[in-house]
Image (tube, rainbow, N blue to C red; front, side, top):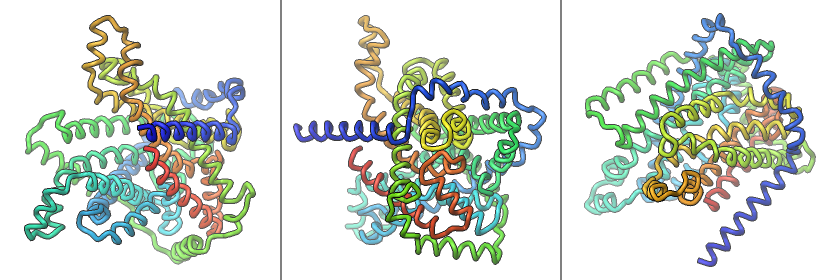
Length: 507
């Protein structure tokens, strides 16, 4: 018990030290933020009122964004369902194969979806194929990891008994563990689909089709009224998808009852939409130039410029890794802390339907805005560099952390809190003394998860020169400097794998 308490104190001390150092290293300045904060609303103000007349030209790229999201999510999720059982220890595969597959998937997860889309667009040409391909790989990495963890955490007693009776491991797994984890697998797929719609909205920046193409164009021209119209339509789509997804997850967890026939109809409709989306994806355009670029990418990955790895200069991999992790740490801390007072009014369990509905729409609006837009806005406030990256990841973290916190609060058992209020304890005191102590560990786990995401979001910041290793990586790829890109990719992979290992020790 004493060892556990000492370990917790050491962990808290190290995290606090890392946060303080990160604030200093990234040049965070509260006075500058206060004095120039009004600039944040300059571009926002230009977006509204939106240009309604531009609506007709948004529909086609919006549909392309949706089909990329559905097709990529479906393909990636299906591949993950096939591969994940071979990654889970004590299931169907030997340990050496499990370890090998896990290593490959973890490396794949470390490469951000934007970088994958950029590479694929170089090889197969611009269009929706590059976006769907990138989303499929991204989805595969996430869903495979979640699914094998669920499989490892399930009881294997029934499966082992069937194997002892002479039934093959694969068949025993399919009839026991697989059945148990399948609803959670579907729920995870729905969660990933929600985020993939937002990812698809910016992939056009690197030639992967969809809304990102016209979003990039209108931002470059300074036509912010049209940008506002694009963002409103994206918000509507994300709202509809998240509402449907939330309802389907309630069916999966049993909180909403429906007939077996209705479940089959829903399943068939989802499959049909996914297949139609796949059929509508542009065919890849394989050219001699694409093959040459592919060889260049492979060469760069296998032959990274070692001079960038073994240097202490600001262009070197070690410095950029440190800058990236400091940007992610500071941004996550800001978002995780600010999200706490937002989460309680957003919980139906605590504040009622009206307050929860208003707050959820507000948070959804924050989450819908692409990182690129936030980056451009904050560069106007702070100037280019790490500070702009911190503020961008901070506001993105508010959107995600608040949602995760709300989910935790909505599943909280309110019996004790209601009992305290019935004897005269104030609502605020009940939250402070009863609810918050019980949910703080889950809040912390959500913040750690967001930190992991923020490391990958750093590549998006490279589009607007908002600091981190993503900036140099994208510049290198756009300049066909494959050995430089290989060095930066190697640094990013090592960084994310190390942080994954550290997170597993903390949580």
